[in-house]
Length: 61
Image: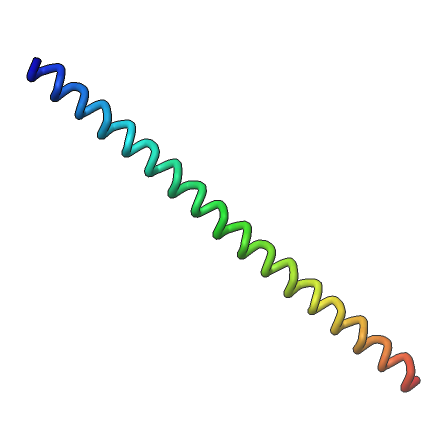
């Protein structure tokens, strides 16, 4: 009975470790997606500013 108890605890510990790794991977993916969205937003802002600058230059000419 004691060996099956140890084996069962090791099995639970292994499963818990795998589950924790999975959650960490998901957490990292979410953080990456947020950063990617922020970069996309900043790129759009930069493109908008460039268009405004070009429009202002065209008006001056």
